[in-house]
Each structure stands twice: as structure tokens, then as C-alpha cells.
Amino acid sequence: MVAETKLYDVLGVKPNCSDDDIKKAYKKMALKHHPDKNQNSPESAEKFKEVSQAFEILSDPSKRKTYDQYGLDGGAGSMPGGFNFGGANSMPGGGVRYEFSSGSPGGGGFSFSNPESIFSEFLRGQSGMGGGDGFEDLFSGGGGIPRARQNSGRPRPAYSSESRQRAQTPEPTTVERPLEVTLEELFNGTHKKMKIKRKLFDEVTGKRTTQEKVLEMDIKPGLKKGSKIKFKGVGDQEEGGQQDLHFVVTEKPHALFTRDGDDIHYTVDLELKEALTGWKRTITTIDRKQISLDKAGPTQPGSKEIYPNLGMPLSKKPDTRGDFIVTYNVKFPTSLTPKQKEELKRIL
Image 1 (cartoon, rainbow, N blue to C red):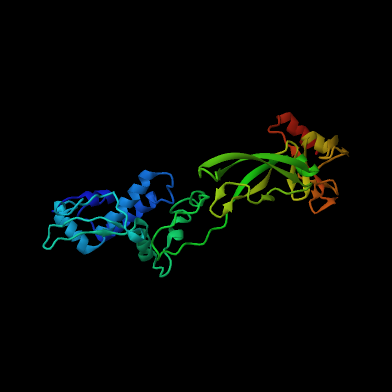
Image 2: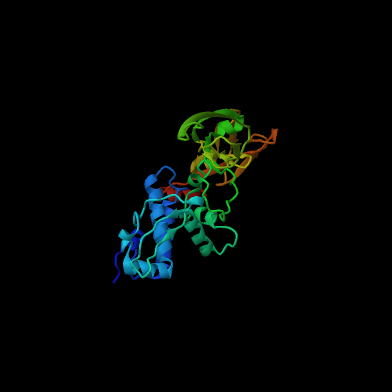
């Protein structure tokens, strides 16, 4: 039976929980309410302080035993001010001290460290990093703050713990966005203008604002899908600078042509009778040149004809082009009458 459960309730654990349960609960709540993740939330800052102080008592066997016996307010009247959980009295060196009389022989009291120092010491114990605090490992990637939130654009506040070693300022992140382009634009080349919105911090107020910026880019003839058009330092503001923005070229589907590397493919559909007896067509290439096709037949299904230097221009050699490839697709009937079958057998 414990005197009170206030500190256990702060961490969301039961009084009979294990030391591992206390560590897991603290880690979860400290990461959730850490000031670097909630820079504009006084409520989260207060919660971070409370869970850190609760952890400092409950993770120490002797302090936990004293708390279980006497609680936070046991004998508080014998000391001015008592114990004010969640409040703070400044101490030299940045520490925070809360005191209460435990009611045990000779009196007693708890001295609390800065919440950031508690967190750093906890991370050192978790990660096994002798000189570092493991902060970047926990807050990078999938387990903590997303990169865009972690790199807020403003330096993190400096805490009083002299033992904490700050991580190096990270490089700005890179954001990729698709840039949809037609096959004709990739063939001829074009000039594009893109309006983007980016988040910056006001130098005076420190508040994050949204600004618009127009980016201009040239699409060179023959550029392939998957190519990247890169802009440096034009995106959201982060701790290490502003994000780089890469536009990734994607190709809009074309009604007539498909592209394969530097070649352009075109399909001619033929009825079975045409394929057997002959046919004529006039087709137009992507640069509007006309090709007259006149076949006496028969035309084999899937057969191809290649027209050199009528395909896509090469991006590094614009005077050189790929091939224009025509493929013949023969459309077979789905059914035949008995009479048609007899006639075909007789003829063929």
C-alpha cells in the first residue's frame, strides 16, 4: 500500500509496476512531449517537466521507497512552501529544486535536476553512448519527430547541463515533387513556371509564415522520365538552412505514341481481311511528318517496320534521334459462321 499514486499516475503506470515499466512509460511520454517537438506548446513543456521529475524519483529505488511511504506532501508543513509538483524555483546553474519534509527521522527532501538533464542521462543509459546523449538517434527516422518537424528552422534552446554534447547541425533535407510533362514537350523542349509554397520563420517575431515563390525551369528536348531538375535552398526553412527541391520528370500518357528510351512506338490495327489481302494507311510522326504505308499483304501479326532518325532527340545530342517503330496488330474475328469456315478452308 502506497501513500499516494500521483507520480505513478503522471507516467500512467501502477504502483506495483517494475523498473522496466517505468523506463518504457517515461521514454514514450518524454518523446511525445519533448520541447523540440512541441516548441509552441506550454502544456507539453509542462508535461515534459512533470514526467521527467516523476521518473527521477521512481527510477531511484531509495527515493521511490520514501515516496511510497510518505508521498509528496508528507510532513510538508515543517518546511516553507512544501512540495509544489509542476512548479519551479530557479537554482544556480539552471537546476530546479523542490523540497518537502519526508516525515522520516531527521527530515529529508528531493532535489530535482533540469528536465533536459534527466532526459539526457536517460538516453545515455539507453543507448550506451559514453560521450553522446543518443538524442539524434531517437529523434531521427521513424521513431520520433519527422525530419521536417525536427529541423524547425530555429536553433534549439540551450540547456544548462554542461555534460550534454550537442549534435552537429544537420544538412537541409531534400524534397522531391513530380513534374508532369507531355511527350510533345519532351520532344520539342519547353519552359515551365511552377508556383510553390514554402514555410519560413519571421526574423522579428520568430513565427512561421507561408510564402509563395515562382520557379522557372527549362525542359531540354529528349529529356527522359525520371530525370531531376534541382533547386537548392528554395523550400521550407530548417535548422541547417532551407530545403532543396527536386522536380522528378514524369511523362503523361499519349493517345497515339509510346516512348521506349529514345524510340517512339506506333501501332497500326488491321482487320484480318486487310492483313491477308492488302491495305493502305497514312500515319503522322510526333513531329508531324507523314509516312505512307501501302502493303499488298499478307501482313504478319506483330511484325514491325523501323524508320531511323524519326524518334526522340537525344538530350545530350539533340541533332541525333532515335527510331520511329511501327508495329502491326492484326484483329482476328471472335467468331465465324460455318459457311465462312468452309470458304476459308477452300481458299486457304
